[in-house]
Amino acid sequence: MQHAPTVTFRFAAAHDASAIRTIEFEAGQRFVSVGMTGIADAPPMVLALVERKIAAREIIVAVDADAACAGFVMFEPQPTRIYVQELDVLTSHAGRRIGAALIEQVAQLARTRQLMQLILSTYREVPWNAPYYRRLGFRDIEEAELDVALIARRDAHIAQGLDESKRVFMRRDLA
Image 1 (cartoon, helix red, strand yellow):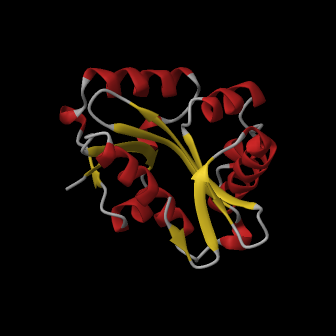
Image 2 (cartoon, rainbow, N blue to C red; image 1 turned 30 degrees about the horizontal axis):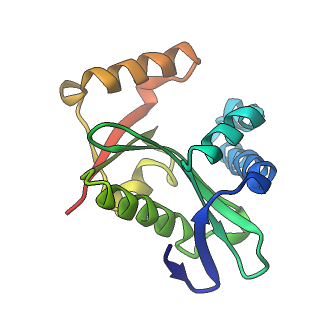
């Protein structure tokens, strides 16, 4: 995996599970600043899920110079693309383009598997969500463009209590 200044990237290992959950929880706290306390109050991912994703090699971590996890990206390979499920970076490491580098790690992985698209779902108006991903080359997917898999995912989000009217699916085509 590629290196950025003082940060390296690798697939998550079993011993990273608690750090990943801590990073996710801390990242959720940022949503208080935009009035989305429900996200901030949510518990981190269940440990068994994180362990399963690690075993499947579906989480890449950013490791800082002190060998501590500074961020992660969790994804789901699909037949024609990779779905980016979660991207979180510790606030203490914000502004160093670690999130962008993690997305690049997934893009490289997709290319090696001949999957030429990244896809995700995120909040339309939250500054570090859709506007951020647009800067990384993602574009909004219009409602009419949603395929069966994305409609099913949207329905699952609604079942989990997410307000899909505030969310958008996005895609980035890989060359």
